[in-house]
Amino acid sequence: MIELDNIAYSYGGAELLSEISIRLTPGSFHFLTGPSGAGKTTLLKLCYGALLPTSGQVRLFDTDMRRLDRDQIALMRRRIGVVHQDCRFLDHLTLAENVALPLTVSGRDLAAEAGNLGELLNWVGLSARSDALPPELSGGERQRAALARAVIMSPDLVLADEPTGNVDWDMSQRLLQLLVELNRMGKTVLIASHDLALIRAAKTQVQARVLRISNRRLQLAGADL
Amino acid sequence: MIRGALSGLIAGDKQADRVVPPSGFTAQLTLFAAGAMGFLAVFALALSLASGRLADRWADELARSATLRISAPADQMTAQTNAALQVLRQTPGVQSARALSDAEQAALLTPWFGPDLPIETLPVPQLIEIVETPQGFDAAGLRLRLSAQVPGAVLDDHTRWRRPLVEAAGRLRALGLISILLIGAAMAAMITLAANAALSANAQVIEVLRLVGAKDGYIAQAFVRRFTFRALIGAAVGAFLGVCGVLLLPEASDEGGFLTGLGFAGLGWFYPLAIPPLGAVVAFVATGYAARRTLRGLS
Ligand SMILES: Nc1ncnc2c1ncn2[C@@H]1O[C@H](COP(=O)(O)OP(=O)(O)OP(=O)(O)O)[C@@H](O)[C@H]1O
Ligand SMILES: [Mg+2]
Image 1 (cartoon, rainbow over the protein chains, first blue to last red):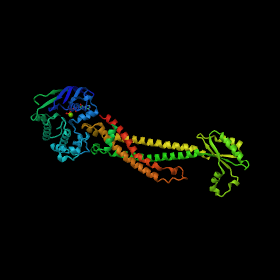
Image 2 (image 1 turned 60 degrees about the vertical axis):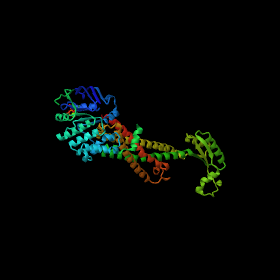
Image 3 (image 1 turned 180 degrees about the vertical axis):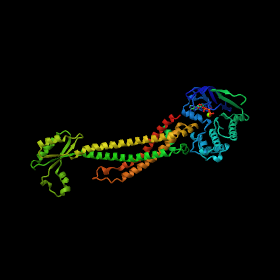
Image 4 (image 1 turned 135 degrees about the vertical axis):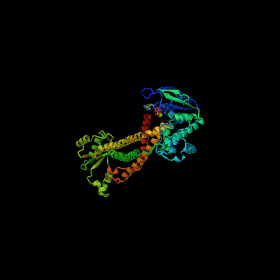
């Protein structure tokens, strides 16, 4: 599904990540953890092609990311659902239109997908808010909307960056529930989070592996997590 | 790729149009620029069409002829006429020379003296019609030779003074056409600036669109469609007002000459119809270029 082969990355200065190799098999559930500033977001960006590694190879669906031109990267993005850490939306579109944005930009017929969209909004509990504009949404509503937008194209791979970043414990449990459900539907899930309590809670529900970035390297966390 | 862009442009896409937020300032700038340019283009077009017509008409009259008038006592008239024809035949630049018959001369005088005048009995000068070659003849040299050989001859080349005017009218037509080109270029420049402003104001929007898998072509098209449409509307309104302005000019008349002739004639009325589509094409090309360049820069 996705393979990182001995990659390194730096934003120009000192190396932020080095000698990183991961392999996510279809249907697996992974957490990526580490202290703030360790490079979790950076590593996810490398995974969906927003950044290219300074060395090493990223292979997504058996394709070397370096070989892709911009249009091909755009096509690749449609096969991956990404929940961004800052969940950015288009503020002039309603929540429903924002969730449907991946369909719009890939030229799908929205009328044909209206049923799916309704179901999805219902699934994340946002049916009543579908006409609200993003600035009117609460933090938790934004994160649920971001998750809905990430999965509307039924991607095989879901990458979530701090999907429970600014919500209370109950809401973070609910969001985790949604991600676990996605995994049960067969999707590969990778969640970046520094919330250890959340990770522990997840491990009671799903077979999850925990990767930790420390000292620029990636290691498999022990059983204490 | 251009065909795809064009068909997408015409087909439109309500949903796709919504992904770029409505931008008041650049929209108004584009409408205004296209409107002003459409208006100006109508006048430049009218100017160049009218000066073209004028140049053609004057050139026509020029090509016609000069006249030689021979006033001589009746007994010398035939001799002098023949001498003059002889001189003219040997003058470079004269294509043909022909003495008018009595009947033709009578016809020329009729408006002044009525049809019953017995001109055979009057000392009317003999007229010789000269048709020039395109190069024309040397009037001063001809006068000199005529004065030596045909004392009663007067060369009247009254259409000559128009020669520089024909040239001026031709230049004016060229200036009108250059103005149209400059108007198009200025419009392209303004719309490019407006499009660049819109693109950079929407850098965040573009980033979100890319994150959800939009291709650059899709994003560019959303902008291009919008600007093209605005330029079309603006240029149509501007051209319409320009045509109204031309319509308000006084009717062309023979005495008025150039100024009142500044308008459209016949099929010329259809030319302004081309201004809005041309404005749209200019906007399409300019915005497409600006969008592709900006999108390549934003990564
Ligand atoms: N565009 C950038 N240019 C330069 N440095 C950057 C850039 N983005 C991130 N960094 C730096 O790289 C480091 C890792 O950033 P990153 O966002 O990947 O961390 P993170 O693990 O996601 O942190 P957090 O848990 O706070 O989200 C940070 O020190 C950050 O300042
Ligand atoms: Mg981060």
